[in-house]
Image 1 (cartoon, helix red, strand yellow):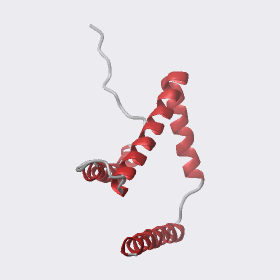
Image 2 (image 1 turned 90 degrees about the vertical axis):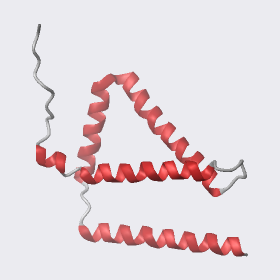
Image 3 (image 1 turned 180 degrees about the vertical axis):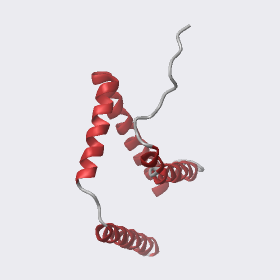
Length: 125
């Protein structure tokens, strides 16, 4: 019987702990996606916003899975790992400072509020 070492990550523990926000974000995204699907298909097809939003996110999910699946089939595990390393290095080249982060956050909140106001105005019209 051959003994093997348990799998150990190449990343230090401090770097792995700093990614907790990613898992929180993915959990929130999964709950939101589940609630969109429940709201969208609770009733028959009426071409509502929830139904179109569910179809849009399902299409995006399909495209992302198809991209990574195609990359995996074409280049294997090494290709996927090299692409992930490339993407992490590219994002590290352009760090987001606090001022840029605040501006982006405020910008998207204002855009979201403007869209809500616009759609509410269009419904009452």
